[in-house]
Image 1 (cartoon, rainbow, N blue to C red):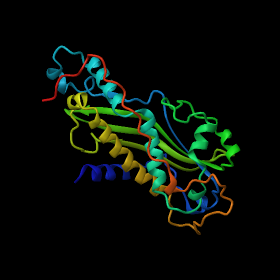
Image 2: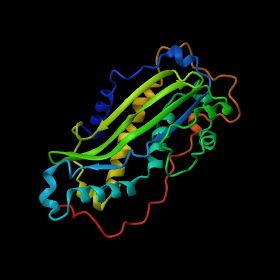
Image 3: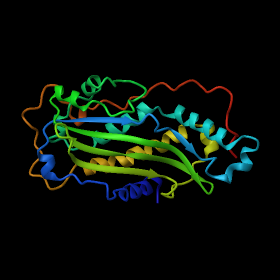
Image 4: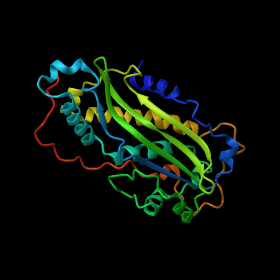
Length: 271
């Protein structure tokens, strides 16, 4: 089974008792949704590799496990910015939604970011934004993706990436939820092939590739959740304004310049 197939199976098993399914009748009532993707300030990236798994002790030699985790976390941060991660989750999910109401009437994401003062910022706000500001854009609902934790972890000498958080959709006026989907994608528990932390220390792009896979698998599941089968009809609403952005016009995932190389303090070379 391929890595993506394993992750797809894992994503399928994620929904628990705290989830809420989106019904077709509820979605039929939605007129103008706004999408928000944010990441908690303390979300990471974190390295739970060397301190939690003694398998690497001999390889580290005189390097303390906590220092090794600190250095690896810095490498993870250099491979993919927090902004890129949160934006990719929003954009890739939105692109997979059908070209029908209410998605054709979605508020322009640039306007959402401007109103919430989060446009093209590196540090996505840790606190929940003031959703009431979206009323000025005639939004009636919010589709929100929140990343609470991500990074690398290891167990018995097998390391991998992980991603934790939740997605939800709620009415802007009452804050009552139409849909909720908690998620935890973990390559270690999912049986995905080992991601050598020492190789990641030398080539951080390896972590970026794994996170991209996690986000893409998760996005497919979230888009499926947001497309309930039992609907009366998903035709474009006539009240869509000129600023409406259809799925085909979604902006590409932003790619920011890589930060400069870190100062001396590398992890040991991979085997």
